[in-house]
Image (tube, rainbow, N blue to C red; front, side, top):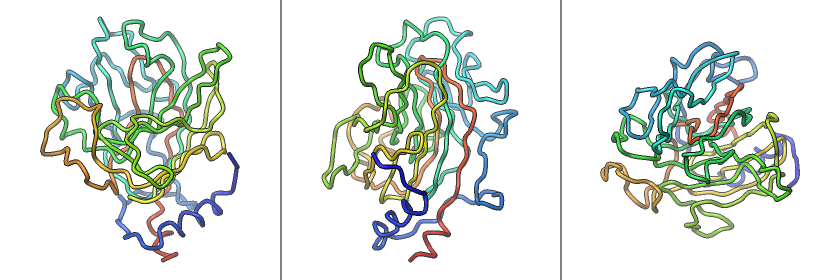
Length: 274
């Protein structure tokens, strides 16, 4: 799809937000341009780990680690994979923001992981607090900015898709209950770095950008639907509109590196346009 400046995109978003309520986002220390790095390049002390079959805070097998100034997802200390899907959550939630993540797929996929996890990872957002997840809950109730790598077979396999564990969205003006919807992105083969951007305006417009190209837009994320198991029923209230939540990096069987995780809080900019 078309590439545009961030200011033009925000202008479009503000129109969509004209009648929406403004929910405050988490405050963070910013630089002069308003950007802050959620990853300090040294450790993941500001992050919370939750891995399926393990209690929150248990970084089983050193799945999420920092090496070479990158967050690395690895499985070299695992026995059987045993559906030990994991997520690394930043410690505080956000509502209105622009997120930038640079990632690459690398290494050997776990052949005992489900086949769909090959060259597959994601960025979860508007997620439930990981501390509300029981030990045996597999996926967080959230929206996923899905990251996929090309299989090298010449077939299209876009990245920057939308998946919805325990949620639904409004797509093309109607409630869409499909679990995943493909974006219009190109296919990225091999271990090349890819820049993924997510512009989230509370419970209104959400925009996916890959390497500068806008590849998907949708709105009104809300709790509902399957693909989440063993959750606390007090948390999964279907029909609840999601206007904020936690951001997480995913682990589901494919080694992946993340070298940049930066965010700009858009709350004040949106208030200034109202």
